[in-house]
Structures are given as C-alpha cells and as structure tokens.
Length: 372
Length: 122
Image (cartoon, rainbow over all chains, first blue to last red; front, top):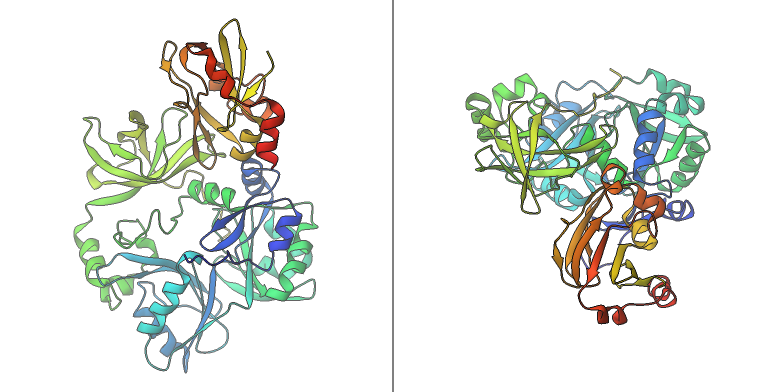
C-alpha cells in the first residue's frame, strides 16, 4: 500500500467506542478484536450471532445493455457460470491470469435491475481488480465502484433470528441469494452468505446508514461485535480460502480444490482467461493440492511452515495456520504434493527448526452450517 | 526483592541467585488469548536478550527473551496444560522459568516498576 494514512470505514468511530483494538489492514484501520477477545468472539459467532464490519471490501456494479451481455462479459474473466444465475442469485468465483493463477476471489450476484451484476472483491485487491475488469470487460460494459456503500456481516446460528426481528422477510432468503429489505427503516441489500461456515447474512447499506444499522443490530442481546482476528479463525475452521494465503498468482482453482465453483458448462467450454491450465488440470490432475492439516501436539504451525513427509523430504508449505477455538487445538491449511494429500497421511510440520508430527485431514474442520 | 522489568516486557524476581521470569501483564494484554507456550529445556544455558520461550496467541507467535544470563533450572509445567493462565495471572502464577544467574550485574540494567509503567503507558 502507499504511505497514506490508513483509510477508515464508516464504522470507525463505533469500533473505537466499543474499545476495539484497531490495526492497519490492507490500507484500512480495522478492528482486530474487541475487549471480549478473539476466542470469545469466535465462540459467540459459533453459538449466537457475530457482527462484522467488512466495509473495506470492494463493492461494485457491472452493467451492460442486458443480462446476457453483462454475463458473457463477466464469463470471459471468471470460470463460474454467470449466464445461468437467476435474478438475486450469487456465485463464488475467481479472477485468473493468463497462466491460470488466481488474481483474486470474488462474489458475483445477478442484480434484479436488468443488465447488472453486483460484485464484491477483496479489500487488498480491489484497486487491482477494478483495473483488471476495466481492461478486460467487453466494450459497452461498465464498472461503477460503490465506495458509497458499507458492508456488514451478521453470522452465526442465531443470525436469522436476530435479523428477522427487524426484517421478517430475511427468513425467506435462500442460501447464496439476496433480497432488498428495510431494516429499522434503513434500505439494505441482504444476501444469505458469509465467511464463517455458519448461516448468516451480508448486508450492504449506504455509508450514512451504516452506524445506525450497526448499533441497531448490536442492541439485540444475541448479537456481539467480532473483529478480524476471529473472522480469520472462523474461516480457517470453515476451510475457506484467504487470498494471499491459499490463493495467489501461482495457484489455480483446481489446485485450491475449488472445482465445485466451476460449473459443468464452463469446465467443458472454457472461454475464460486462464482456461487452458484449468482444463488441462481438470483432465490430468495437479501436482499439488490444498489440504487441511491437524498437528498432533498443541503447537500451532503458521503460514510458511515447511511440510515434510515421514522421510523428511519437503512436500509443501502451510498457507494458514493457527488455533481453532471450536476444534480445541491447532489447525492449518496448506499445499502438499498430490500423492500426500489423502486424508490420514502422516506428515511433519517444521516449526522453529523442529519437525512436529501432523496428519492430513479433510476440510472443513468444523462442518459448514449454511442454510440451503 | 521486588520485580524488575525489561524493555521486552519480561519481569524478573531474584531470590538466592535464582531469577523467576515471566511476561508482564501489559505483554499478555497485547498478545490476547494465549493458546500454547514453548518452554526451554531444563539445563539450557541462556544469555541475556536471547530467545528462550515462545508464546502463541490465537493470532500469532511471539518470542520471549530472557533478560538475564544463566542456566534454566525449572520451568512452569502448569503452562503446558493451561496456557491461558498467562492471561489470568501473568505476573505471578504464570511464571515461565527459573534461571540460576551467572551474571547478577545484568539486573542493574533492568527497570523498576515505575520506569516500566512509564515505558508502556508513555
């Protein structure tokens, strides 16, 4: 990032008032935790409803003369099937480079307004992504940044109960769809999605309305604020990729075990930047694969730790690692040679020069509880 | 003696030439929830300002430096089963290790409580 002072979301003052520890994160001053602490915030989200400020993420609209035009334009940039999206439906996908490596991951939603997609990209990649889209989207398809919008996520088994008190219609939103809702008089776009492995919502509102919405949601005893620290431990337990860790410009979505996000027609037809590698890997497999890792002891292995086989040969690296509060022990994700990627395979993690025993396990660590 | 403090946020109390060493309450607050502690082997010779232990919080690993030189004669086994004791009782029950001093003069370089509080509170 630049030397400029960190940016603030519309909820900055509210975080400070709540006693959050603010840290610089991809150019923003963001709450890493509130006074309750990461463990308590993590557990609260698994049991009740956690409220996250994710306004640093990039929200934008892609528009063309009709849905088919804009969907086809987007399909040139991502491996997901955009054309088959129904109004209000959303899909997870990735931007790939020509070599099939991942430039970012993103959410694509078919807006009810004809010829419009609502796209959400990672905070740390948004400037890149906006440029990439403007460079590669077909002529006549436009990108509009929506820096005027904030985004909060309400996640956990009680998220629906809490939000439905204010907007009963949210109960009827299917997983990976959105609805327009009034929440205490605030106009909001509410999608049933998230990044914790729990049921929940992501709520997009005008910046000016964000503090009112934030405090309204927090007035419910089921809801507590949750910072980026617990957001990371929740997504790690949920086996979800974080750009810059499980995904980067060298890693393909096939290696990352994201084939589920590439629908059948696209696998067969290709026609997106990076398709050559993706189709080749779909046919022939990959040399490495993303896996879940469970250390046998209590010591966490962090990002970058070398993974060795039982003979001590290096077979991969940890991409995210830490403590899983709901697992009750250390957990990690990483890439290993495909031959060693089978759950149950015994491996070692080199932590501070010592090889510590661990095993490959299937992901996620905590079963996802999305409402389908 | 009363506790002395290092700029690396350790505390030291010396009795009969043995230094009991832990991390300060300020350090535990900065670390957040502690989930794992790696302690040195008994008998290990340590030099002042050398890394002797590791504290892992939910977020990150942090190194613990010994403020004095000597030989590790005891470690707090309780921390292995209950690392969160550091969050509850950093400056007493959650001591890390006991070191038999080889150079007691090093203690003079450490701060008293007033000076340490000034360091962390500005």
